Length: 229
Image (cartoon, rainbow, N blue to C red; front, side):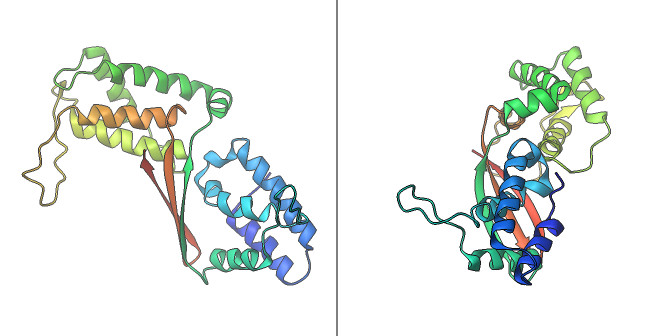
């Protein structure tokens, strides 16, 4: 099922012009939301729509006080339309976790690869690195990087950065060079901190750790960033 910002905005515009009923919009959003939750949410463009689709997916239901079910207000649907077409800016955050089911079925090869990387990071010493580890990390850093399309791609950018900042591949040694500091010369630096950071990032990729996502819509364009817990 194709889901993107333009499609969602188009559906809301059709509703606004009375070419789409409340029931039709709500049922479409419900279908899109459930489809996204099967694994498509891992794509950055689609997860930026998660919050909106979740809300509009109840637009068509009848209020039920007993079941505590209430539809998304029309005002909110129209407000989402204003956000998507750039007339209103908004920032929202939510907690997320990559599903192991999605990883093991849709990303099986990469899942096994990251499990092996995590195993190596767990035994990595902050002072020394074995030839096998050096070779493994060097091959990873030298891989062609993917276009930033998924949450995994986003995490990988940080993993590669940490590796290149802390390992001297030419000399074959740990070289603690995380020196991008501003007015922090007197801050004590823990040489093993990069190992902890790598573990956290890999745990997120492997579905072992949750993280908070912050999405900013500014003039109709979305920007996404994550915060580790």
